[in-house]
Length: 374
Image (cartoon, rainbow, N blue to C red; front, side, top):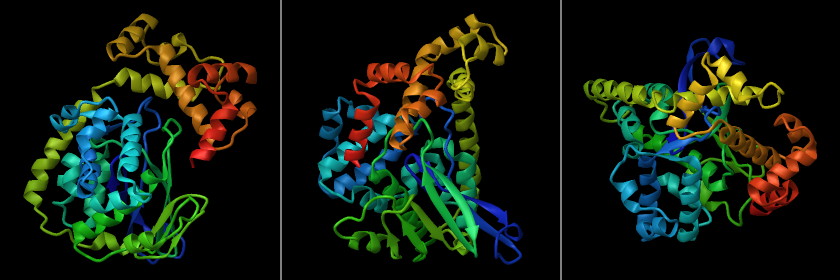
């Protein structure tokens, strides 16, 4: 399934290559991210799900956006616009506070609708089966953007999808992960009209005062304090038919999706390519504007011009990537010495000085703040 900045993608997978699987074909779910992008963007259209839930609580969205210094018209007038993931997370956190709902992500997931997912949602609702719907999502996920990545395993005819985030992702609250899982379950039920549920759900957060809402939404055993957030599914759900499918309409919408993705690929092409090369060399002394330009088969001046046309500078790009990775490594309890090596700093003191300049906090202060925030 697909929720806002993430997606679950179903692929045909030869079951003979898995453990304890019968001969045949199963459909497994996989979520992937694009960690090579300096900034992760998502479609404005996915905010419709959040706003729908807020509306049910009679929380007005325009004052909420205005309080964040945002113009509500920009979200209303261009549904195909894209915003940085950092901004999406900022809006979601503010919405959760305004709603006063400790289970904001879980409840927001119950408002998942294909119509909120732009062209991709329209394709999914016109496929013949859940399996075909997820195959389309695998091919066209970039239409709505992506963030959360999943590691998939298939054991004893059960699919386990574990959630994770790419290296350059911003810090996420539990609402993001809970909404991913809740939205996935809601969409499985909505598209098929069947009362389907995961076999098990696990969350990497401490158990709340009450687990009643989690069990109501997922209708399966729910565990807390796990090493990672995950859900376990029965592969047979891929064979369930999608209600009211229209294959003729699917063909027309898919043609538009191909055109839309093509236009996306033309945007920020130099930034994406340079970012891939920077990430591959962060721990390498050879990282420089000249070395990246050489690998891209262009002169330094040409690379600078192309990045400039996309509103980027090479030095700023390197700094942004180092900062986002540094924050991730600190949250994951890497030592300062390890981070210094991974990000290509000459010594820990240089990293500490750079991090303090970026954030106004020492690495230790940032780590402690993140621990408290959880």
